[in-house]
Image (cartoon, rainbow, N blue to C red):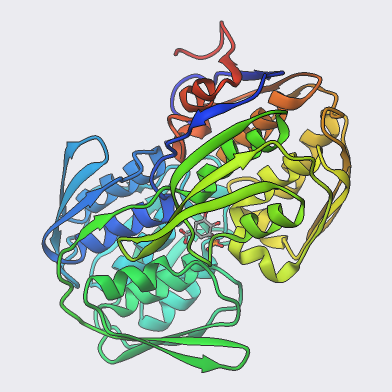
Length: 453
Ligand code: S3P
């Protein structure tokens, strides 16, 4: 869990240019899915480039709880010996998904159409987040869920003993909900249909097809219907995980705001359902080029070349939100260094992430001397230009890895150091963050006397 150990704070200070190559970790979304689909196939799935962040390690432990055998052959190189669709065993202890909404929601989907019962919990962040968005559609398969008020964890899910296929139109743009329904649909007879009004990350669909499931796509109203034929036999695969664009965003952002920086971030996923930040940064005037675009393991990847750039504020189109949903914290930090205002609308979903990210960014930016405006579903950051951000504050990370990393990036280019009160959550998605950033030239350090590390 992200809350393990004593909290330790981390401080970022004014840094010189960043230079070199940033090998960011494997994609978090794809890592979860590789372990879950590996566990749902019969035989050995080999995964390379797996993110060994705490979120994914918690999913690995959960898959063991449901009866799969997982072996770590070498760093990032794992074998999953799966039990097949419908083969999950009933776990004999509580499944603790730590900080991970993706982990818990996908795993609930994966077990919901099997005749087993499981109890799920998580850390102080995850137990505040809504689970009704997955348990509502899972009830249509015949699963039952009992949790705390407001559909919060801890929660027990009783899987359907005679699951029926489902047709479900997503009320929120959520890849986690879409994926939970598709994973439950694997063990239901007939066709399960998910209607997605707005395109969200499509890693589940891509990987399901890679493992041999039958999927069709049809136009449906404004969006599309994803139609899964139930009860396939999934065939084990070799999965090479591309590097995470959401993690790449942090060194990319730091290079953009530190004068004379020039870095390379190789092998980053360019999946169009994930690269909204890339388009936004180009509109802001970023010198950011995708080189050597290629296909790796069914996902498009590229090497990103990034140089310091004078940025200008932009209006981010609301229909881009799904393709950069995890990148708003780092964009808000970057926007502080742009000329003019950056307006982010249609981002109400940020209020139910690992923290309320609109509030966390607004309060932290204000503490760093940046003027912001917020509404229920928007955030405006009034940029102060390169070199114009005062900093000099301690900011709360609120058990949210992306809030912690966004403010540490901001601190590298602010006039006075910025401290993040609790840097433990970074481990959920980017355990090598501190070392990687220092290797590029960032002045980043744990504060002595805090934590146990
Ligand atoms: C994810 C989907 C997104 C994203 C999260 C990972 C996934 O959440 O924010 O970090 O892997 O499916 P939502 O489905 O809640 O939008």
